[in-house]
Length: 208
Image 1 (cartoon, helix red, strand yellow):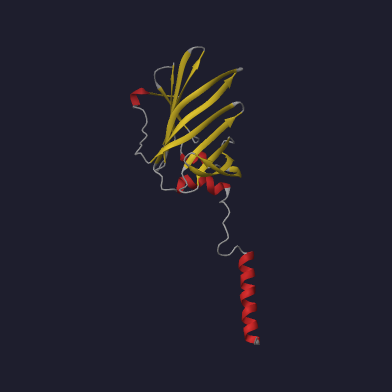
Image 2 (cartoon, rainbow, N blue to C red):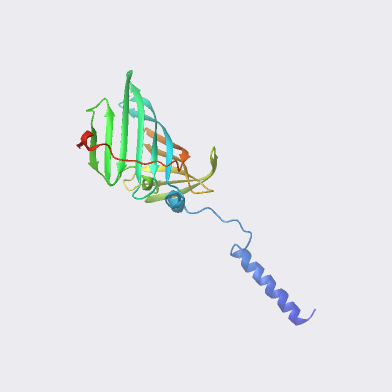
């Protein structure tokens, strides 16, 4: 073998080694960072999403189950709505929250029969689940609606949550919000259904 041929083989060998060390062609890519995973729904081709709410709430050693549903609208400025019902001492109780344009509107039954409005920087919306600190990647899981990345973080109020984001399109499949002995699970079942969220009629609103 001539020296030029040996040199060419040596160059090919060195390039192959370098590519292997750098994760060359064919090397599987690792998952995105937890921060990128939780931000994916904000950048996906997603207009709105509907979710089912289940959970448990404990107060003064009394534990009750919660059930309801809600929606998130991803189009600017972003909005959220959820409603749940429960039964306490044989009495049905419902609670509804609408967050839009920096305003939180809440309604409870039994209650005053009016919506209460408050200015907020922590309303329910798509950005509520993007996280701001303590990001952690947990792993991959197979859920009913697809393979998902599982990550955890804290929101700007310091509340911890978990998110399962579908790998194929960046859509949210599930969020878990837990505080002390209270927990809510949001399980997403519909996307891009043309949802709009509007504030309640002004005649039905009082300032909180």
